[in-house]
Amino acid sequence: MAEILTKAGMKVLHRNGHLALFADGTHGVEFLDYNAMHRNFIFGVHQSLQQVIDNHGYECEWENPEVLNLYPVNHFTDDITPDELITLWNEFCDANKWSDHIYPNDDDAFDMFGFTIRQTLRAAKADRYSWDDKYLQMDGYGNPFSFNNLTEQIDLAELEDYLYENAKL
Image (cartoon, rainbow, N blue to C red):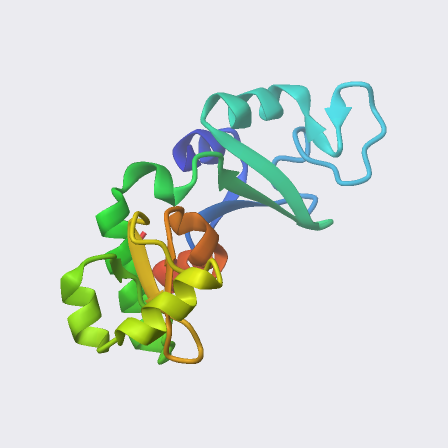
């Protein structure tokens, strides 16, 4: 994508895992104009450039009148397994000294955390734990907390920023 835009006279910036087009009035002015009111422009982007952006799986958003950010439409979680996502999340938690690690809901996790039967029954009664859920965390009070949907418990925006900053995406 960057090569295509460069050949079209656009100044392309690489920024934290996404591309950006620099619209300084000298590069690609026929395709980008933040203030354009012409019929061939939609929100400052020429229709032909918008078609190239769409066809390559990106969406765009103006950061300011000189920078148009291009983001991939597919999310980084589309290409990884749940186990890989858990590994990345736990690595992020270690790096940031967070205690939100995720583990499989199994005997090994219970042994590691040292949960008691009383804690588990109390959490189950409060609908915070189910033996049938796939994943397990320890809540802020040291009790078990279970769930099935990883994306509801993982801060995907924080994780994605961490992965970009550490060149893992």
